Image (tube, one colour):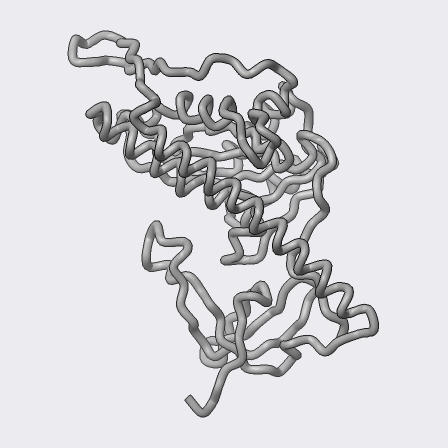
Length: 303
């Protein structure tokens, strides 16, 4: 069996070629809004944060079309396997605009660009802003433009000292946004509030550094992938074969909000080896799952 590449997809050569997206749960607001749809261009890191009531395919499709009317249609989409991304509406939209929609294997967040990392850091920066300015946690929706503006308008080391908005739109970097609109304040009228971003400079710096670290990790993985492929030129036995018994490093879905916390569960039996993943079957229930190879290890019957 020939060694397979570990989840690498083609690298974008131009802006707006690969679009990553994911939903982030933010909690209650003053209205019905509870989620943010995060869209991010892979090459330039330009992102948009869209507040919404629920994670649905309609919200996703509308956001993609809204992105397209301003920037053009991305040739490739990357998302997880959520039902709001993997359904008939999204399939119809993909076919109509002739795009390629790639779904990452379950519990392999690094394959989906930097979306998962951004989600965690957005929450951290949002908490810092709410705490520093003594705003109710339900005011997070009104701070979204501020967070998006600073993500897009701040120069990044991994982009050669350029800002995402500069690379994506070819516009000069504007003065960073520092004003938000808070509807219905204590005086029962709309209020403009100036936010001092210096108070959360450390959090924003950590956010940018974490993004840079993630990109370095991705580069490292691609280098390792090339080495694997070179080693496999004359053929090499795969670690897992059909019939092997394995354990799966799986996220405990009962722990809400802990996507990165995993534990080994099983045993499972490998029933199929695909190009980028494996199909494993639970020995007791018979349920089958598609799993990335890096999430598997051999089951030791003696333990």
